[in-house]
Amino acid sequence: MPEDWSTKKLAHKDVDARWTEMHGKQAFGYKLSVSTDGRYKLIRTVHISPANEGDQNHLLKALDRSNTSRDLYADRGYTALDILKACGWWQYIQRRAKPKQALSETQAGRNRRIVRIRARGEHPFAGLRALGGKCLRSVCLARATLQLHLKVLTYNLKRMCWLKNNGVAIF
Image (cartoon, rainbow, N blue to C red):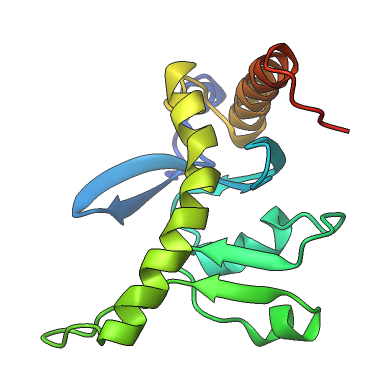
C-alpha cells in the first residue's frame, strides 16, 4: 500500500483482502473454509482468510477436533498431510489426473466413492448461496469474518428447523 495514502483513503480500501486466481479468473477477497457434519449437513467450524492463502495453510484451522469421526473428505486441492495421519485422521482425498495421463480405473472408482460422501459436505455452500452467497461488501477481514459467521449461523438455524420439522433427532 502506498505511503502517501491518507487515513480517509485507507478507510475505503480493503488492505486485508488479496488477489488470487480461481478457475482461470482473477478474484479479490477472502477464502471461506468450513468443516461440515456429514450426517446432518451442519457447519461445525469456519475459517476465513485472505484469498491468496493456500488451502494447505489453514486446513488444520478448519478441522473440528471435537468431531468423533476421524474421516477427512476433501477435494483435489488438498494433498495428504503427514501431520493429519499422526493425529489419527483418515484422509479420503480425490486423486488428480496428471497432465496428458488419465486416471486408472481403480483411481476413478475411488474418486466416485469419495464424491458421493463429499456431496453432503457441499450442501452448506448451496445453502449459503441461497442466503446471498459468499459475496460480501465489507472493508476488512474482521467485518468479513462477522458477516460470514452470521450467514453460517443463519444457515445452521434454518437447517436445524428443517431437521426438527422432519422429525430428525439431532442429539
